[in-house]
Image (cartoon, rainbow, N blue to C red):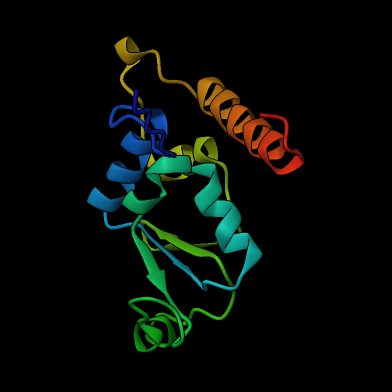
Length: 134
C-alpha cells in the first residue's frame, strides 16, 4: 500500500479564497525570503500561501523584483499594499479580509474562526512533528 501526504489546502478554503481575492483586486505583499515576519505571513495562509500576490524584494531571493520594491518605496517587510494603502507587518487572514473588503461565501461555512482553528491545528501538528510525536 502506498500512502502519500502533502501540506496543501483544499482549493475552497477561506485562506485560498482570500488569497485569490487579494490577487484579483490588485493587492500585493512585498517581503524578503530571510524575514521571519514574511514567513509568518505565509504561514497564516498555510498551503494557500503560493496563491498570495507576493513580490520578493531581496535580490538574492527567488524571482526577485528589488527594483519594483524600491519604486514602491518598500523598506520594511512584509508590507501589504491594499487599495493604495500601505500596511506594515504580518496580518492574520481575518484582518486582511476586513482591510480588503473580502467576504467569504456564507454557505461555504468559511469564517475567520475556522481559519484561526486551521492555523492552530497546523501549528500544533508542526510542533508535534518537531518533537517526534508522530
